[in-house]
Image (cartoon, rainbow, N blue to C red):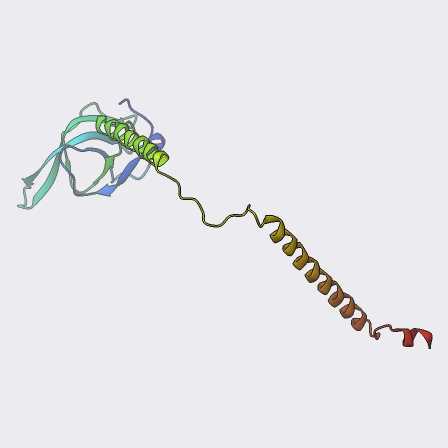
Length: 182
């Protein structure tokens, strides 16, 4: 990997920061003490092991050892030397999410595609159950006539009800011959 800017690093896929590292996995190592993006340096490396060092005052400090370490984000004034160990505090460790598929991913995809194709072929061969209700048959014309007759009767009744409600809402009575001749 070549060096990139901090803005490009921010857009890279990565997991949440963690303090429990797993040997053999790649991690981004970001300096957590610097606040300005121009001064932050970021490394990428494979975690090897954790070691403990005793300081001059007798306190033990945990350090993480990395292999294959490279600069990812390098400040303009940064030196050329890279240490192989980083303290547990003061640094932020984020697991790298690989962007390219592994050989195992490719094999799993091939297997899954083959299984899917076999499943589809099996479903095509299975017999389809026929529905018990027939929409077209001997009684089709008879059913159609009775349906149309029922709808005609309902629509006539609805029309009468509408006209009654209109005349009553106008305050008038129903017009009959007796009312018209007077």
